[in-house]
Image 1 (cartoon, rainbow, N blue to C red):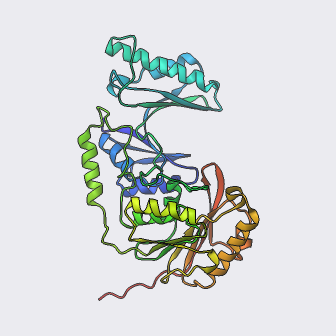
Image 2 (image 1 turned 90 degrees about the vertical axis):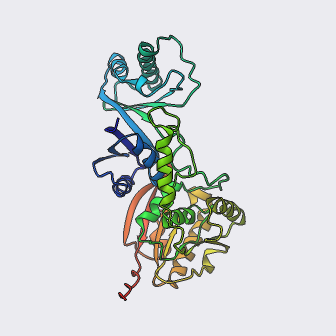
Image 3 (image 1 turned 180 degrees about the vertical axis):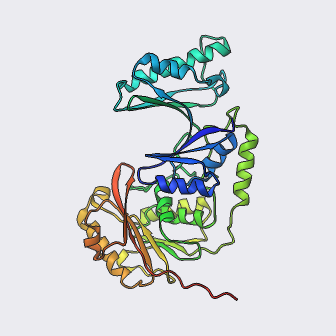
Length: 381
């Protein structure tokens, strides 16, 4: 069981970021594909990956992969998997599915076939015709692509963007995984200031603080694989202890955010307090035209408003234009902005040094990167 094929799913465009995260966790034997990174590990690595990955959506176990052009092939391949090794007699095992460019195009039919195969396999070991399914949850997924079926087991449950520090959301939330990716793709380091002039519900400042203090993003939540016989409690306890021991909360943070919407700031303040940063993240209500971030060589990281997001293109364009003017008074700062707007550079009055296509949910966006000067190196004592 220590040589499992694990999959860290990745939002489109973030595969390299997820891969880098896994490398830093010590998982060097990996394969990067569209929408996922496959790496090897055991039950203990299921715990570590779920606790530590900031930009992945979920962690799956690759149970099998095989050609399937008929329902019989799909059934036999799924039945060949040793399901009783993972799922106890009382386990709940729903089957989800998707199909693309495959002869088996009916997703409900494929789900039904795989469910039947799992039941038949379970019968051979547990000797019963009926499974109550009132125990731990084991979500099985069948992916069909170009007539090849991949069967996976979801170790995560609700997506990894659910960190456990947020109860309320504003009108246009930015996923925590995307906010973390924006920060990791910037040149920000904890000793530099970070500012978000459109902070909304506070996602970017909170994710920056978690990165700055090396806090595992999943440390406040639970996962589907807790309670699985093959992922015992002691592995979770050990992984959480490692995560708590890795926190570096003595590092002073220079993180701040502002927004013109007082209701959004109320939501942000509540989330920041619950995340444990009430004394470390500064919030201010003000328009972008009046921002004056403290410090030099900082990073402005933001998800500015745009028409499809907030419904008023004129106001959104005006806010971006004001952002461009404000940046003129921050000559040592770098700026990183994720937006769906295709005229962002024209509106802000500056060409980006680098652009990257990303998806905020299902919205295709561009991550514009404007590099300012790096802080001067400190002279050795």
